[in-house]
Length: 69
Image 1 (cartoon, helix red, strand yellow):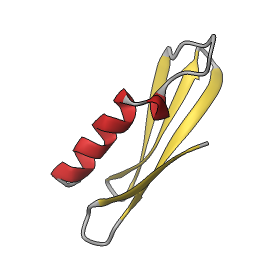
Image 2 (image 1 turned 45 degrees about the vertical axis):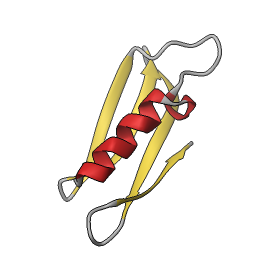
Image 3 (image 1 turned 30 degrees about the vertical axis):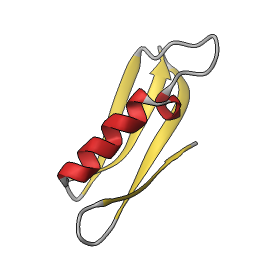
């Protein structure tokens, strides 16, 4: 992962993009990797899925986008 990708992920987590929905609290985070590259972060309150951040990478290893679902 590039330095830029790390900074982008850090900024996304600090922004509202990674905030828990109103009235919810993140209690567990799971990371998914594909070929050694971060592909998603899944956020839970206990066993309840709250949301997922999905990462798309450029061929040069820089972060292309982060989407929340």
